[in-house]
Image (cartoon, rainbow, N blue to C red; front, side):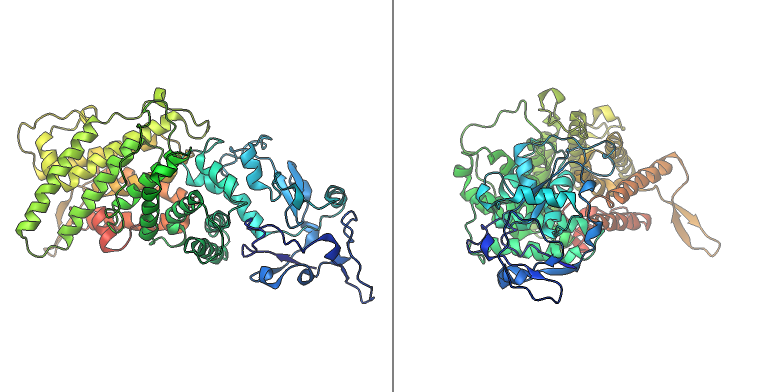
Length: 591
């Protein structure tokens, strides 16, 4: 027996249109599988499915709906509803059997699944998983309950639907991998849960994200991810005749932009960032009246931070407008699910990235020094000093001022530690690119005085400053080591790994070989061993993340970091991750 598995090209499954009015019960026909010729008769929905019949799907669905469907042989005897102890059979708008399953947010990945699923689900989450929303009772066929009871008592014959599996995977797993925390309070979960069944653009967006995450185990889903992403882009470009609200469009732009690197690790989605920024600027006064404004605004700032170190295309050209109305209170705020750090620090890191990229790009393309170049570097130094002072003045998030998002896997201390790690990482970038600022405050390393600078007694040597920066990088990594691997803040840690990689350098000693050639070798001392351990920590974390996060992006981050270390070990003490990412086109979304 063959089953037809509908792909996301089915507009009914996409949830953006209702079932065709003409597709009613009295028009559904069954055809016998034996050679005996029967006269077709309408199927009464109260009747159980005759198990020796198969659907002729072409009689009940339009060819345009079937376009793109996959014909898969399925051994239906292997499907057993007993495998889903918390499942409640339900009917979709198309009359297909669906499974409504209660499960907890604790089942975020294989590490967390050490207990039975909980049986609590918020209303928005319940509606986001079942294909038959409670607010659409007219789409539920009469007699469906009786027929489901019959199926549950006999070997199940339901059609396994790929799009349903992808939607389920999105709400079960993808959100928890994408965010630094997850619970009923997660705005991303709330928004997608409320929109996906009625919005074609959100439906195709989450299908693409789910397929991308599963592609490492099911390679053929990579093509599905690209196709679903293309469908969502068609909505954005107006190639689909459908009404798309501003919030739906903006949410889709953000998700597609953030996850472009899931499909192609080299894709920074600058054009989508520009479109989203233009849209949020033009609709700011309208969006600020809604409850989701803070989520959208901070999502854009987080996106800008991730792009700032790799490109200036579409980032510097569109700046956000000044806030309208009173500022949001700084106390008792919930960490943003994407960044996990304070909004103020996100902006500081973004300013750092823009300055660093602009300065390094000018140096890499500079052939002859002009007065304009000198003025630009002087301006950059003044801007760097201003950012340095802001980083000194910044007060990391206090646990007492945070609203607990109620995710057992991400404690408030994790947010505080990530906040501090990002603050130090931004300062490290300033000192690496503008060493004069480090020279002005240089004192022998003391981790308790990182943010309490004193005037230098004498100008430090290049080696002394390199050692100071290496110790700062090691201190940043020690903060991340205190955060358990299972913490969902892992999704934003790769950025820090790349940013500190250039400071994990060995002190080179020249070893003279018998043939008169001198070769640099690192000494086997305590400092070199600590550097080796720090490198191994980064590689082990990224290797583990590769089994959880999208593989292609993690591999590209590893490639960038290894390029930095190869250059350092070859004697290039000035190797810098931003330079290599730009020259070798290894930039990717590190969040």
